[in-house]
Length: 625
Image (tube, rainbow, N blue to C red; front, top):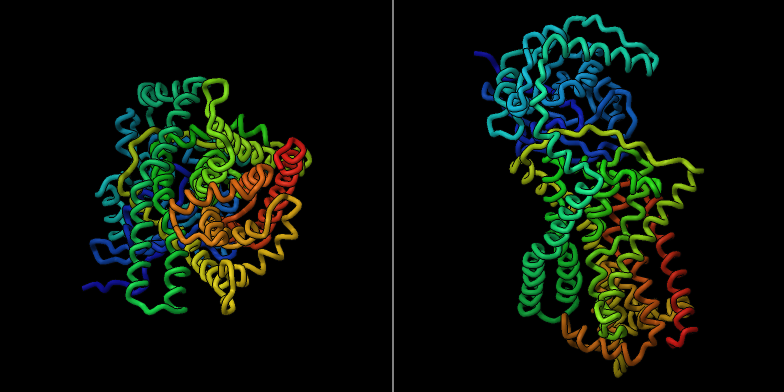
């Protein structure tokens, strides 16, 4: 009776982006996954454990997707170093599983040949083999195996049993280095590409037969999706549906989370004696957790669309379609989706920049993502516009309040593009990074992969951001609660707290832009999240009501005590100011450095102060005092 090895076999999945490698990884490992970052960088490290039917333990590493071992990005460098045994904290795999898209084998074979030239134990997996068959692509697996000198298997990563052939093979064999291939690759990069191209042509001629009918459906779809006019209309319709879903579908779960947190806070308040601990739990811990959790439905809906569009093969086409437009400000089409995500919340938008291969483009996209008008600004905008902008029509058609709100959105977008253009000039006229990407075959998204992807994103958001914002919320509670007002003190208690003292000190700093000390106080707890400023203003003005009642009473109150110039200045302030700790924390996590979040906060505060100063002075000059 054979014994099961106590040390698991280490295998690594290697493949091009969009080859279905991660879907196969999810199928093999299921929930037995660990997601982390490689030491010192922000590239994700996915590892899972599986037990085969024969009892073999296998540790599976999902390497970042790459088109070549000649690395051009951080992700590709990680993959290259692990495959070649150069990574300082990752042991080289005992077996390379080269996953290829059977419908685009010609594009995938270059990486396979580069890996094969290393002489490592290796197996080739033809993923999406069912789609290749439907497209009339005939692959002679025996001939392909002889040409490459490695075993050739097939898989369907979106089927429940799609990895069975690979799992049976892992049970039956021990990894051994393959025989020498006889392929000599030049050290010169250009000659190396030519050598690989010739070898790919030779292998394809020996083992693959493609029919012209195989690409007809994809070609017909691309005739619309990539058309300069119809493609843009299709993209606009897709984005409209996404926006509607984010703001409509998320409302019920967001309300449920708010009500749940409020009910829990009420229960704690009813069952605990009044004191510091109760205030800490209700006003600090629960309020802080609720401010994080309330954005989770929007984040999951956004990632549902992004993952579905990516799995279907449409997302690379959208990026390709917008590449020329984004290139005008020095970015590539890959920046489009992260910026789109930031309209709901900058945190998922910043997380989505991981799909950008160029570090420079990714960094610029991260730094301008907070300028997209997120949903957290809407309560503040609604309060100020309702209080100061008359609800009359312009030209008999347009609502003036709606035009102001639209102008705030456009101002954020235009400012983001301006910052990106300045970053381009800083590079002394260097153009955008060329967009080189494979357009995968269209396919139905895998429900299993979507579910696992959403689960993973939810954990990442809650673990990486939730802990930080919770700690800051507790700190802000402390600043707003202590010291307590002296006996017989008049006015709101917050005036006597640390936050109140900070507000009075900040009052001198923000006076040139039209803010009073009450506004300055509201900006302090508003650092946790922008919408907190509404309730903070209510506290400052000694209002006892909460929720919608605050806005109903606060609007007339500030309309009677602030000037129009102050209101416009505050509106402009919220277009730019980084009033969101979770966003700063996300930038810190994604860049693995405090340098960039501090840079982002610095330039946004400078923009906010400068724009508010100009707005306030112009409004005063025009009679808005």
